[in-house]
Image (cartoon, rainbow, N blue to C red):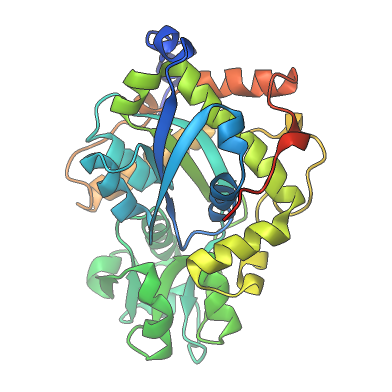
Amino acid sequence: MIRRRTLLKALPATALAAPAARAASGEPVEVTLGYQSLWAVGGQVFETLRHTNILALNGVTAQFRTFTYGGPLGEAAVAGDIDNIYAADAPTLRAMARIPGSKVLQRTHDQRFAIMVRPDFEGGLIDLKGKKLSGPFGTTVFPRCVQALIAAGIKDPFHEMTIVNQDVAVQADAMHGGLVDAVTTWDPTFEELLQKHYAKVLWQAPLGEGMGIQGMSGPWLAKHGTDGAVRLLKSWIMATWWTSNNIGQANEWFAKTSRLPVDVLTAANAADRYLAKPQPNIAALDFLIGPSDISDTQAVMDFLYAQKLLSNKLEAAPFYDMGPLKLAQQEIAAGKHPALDQIRVAAT
């Protein structure tokens, strides 16, 4: 359990203040952003950033790279190929621990995730004992699903089941071909498996328990400081607002990236607090990560360490800095942002 006093110390409002003057002096804010081609909702917001002038309106020049899930994205951040770390909590923190000075700056979106089984499977979670389960080990969905198995009575899943590390991109083929009995998965693969009748839901996490987070690497923060972080965060808030009001267009863009039908993406949107319906008031959008969320993340990191899926014990709280986001949201609420009617779809 993380003490509240520890959390307060770990969330300094001015943690990135030192380099701010340099970034605010007119130095261009350049960034290479990575996002996941098979992670819906957040993917739609990234497509909006990619296909509109929102970043440019905030003085940011960006390049984009896509990855199938958070593990490879984190490795790219460690290698210096991208500047952000965008995933769920476990893969984000695992990457940040290898990049000094990196900080989690925001929540990005809500996600659905589940344990899904072949259509002919009968029984409950306990009946997966002796069965074959796959999932990407480097994700947060995987350990959270394993925790659900343990709670259901499979006390040692790694010995009482056959568990394999498998990329989310091949889950549909694995289930359809009968290569595995169950998968740990999320949208849009979640919905794809349902619509193709390759799988059914055995256990689903309550809505609100899954979220995406995003941070920036230490070298990028050292160069661009609070000013650069605030520009990026304001861009994300504006992009989420625009996406909620233009969801059809954002779905079309992400459908091309994910190579999945638009209707597969629609179900994922319904699970997000802001993309489920158009948002009239941009000032109402809140991406803060609270103490309870960080405590929950710590429990996951401790579980990974106990299961020897994490080589070193990791304290989550020091990696979080909500100061820049608080400033960005205050400026948005005060109307200190580019005019929303100036948002344009970029020529492609």
